[in-house]
Amino acid sequence: MSQEESRPIMYLFVNKGLGMSPGKMSAQVAHAAVESIFISDPELVKTWRLPEKHYIKIVLEARNAEHLDTISKYLEDRKIKTVRIIDEGLTEIEPHQVTALGVEVVDRNVVGKTFESFSLYKPELDIKVVFRWNIMELYVVNLIKVLV
Image (cartoon, rainbow, N blue to C red; front, side, top):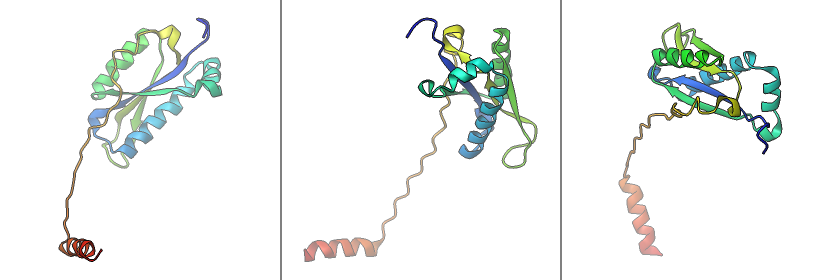
């Protein structure tokens, strides 16, 4: 790949502090992705949409709304446009909460290490294992072993 070839990418941030369900969080990140297109350079978006560019999107996490504001200011100070996603509060969370932050499609060759200090979004895992022994099932399994 030549140095001049652009490497477009979309970064999206999600407010992890709201404890949104996976579905709610996905919808908010989708809103951020759509809005990011509208603030992006149309020529870079065209390149980003080429089949070999694969529409690369990276979802990063923010601890809370204040962290999202700090991230937005950090990026805007570097002339990178952002858009806040504010929820209406019709389902899981209180109205007027900042749920996500969209970032214009950027060229990784231009932004360099700007995004390296941020963490990939990783959900908190709440794993519950339930063991149920049905005595009748255990009896039937052992009976079959004896008969075979």
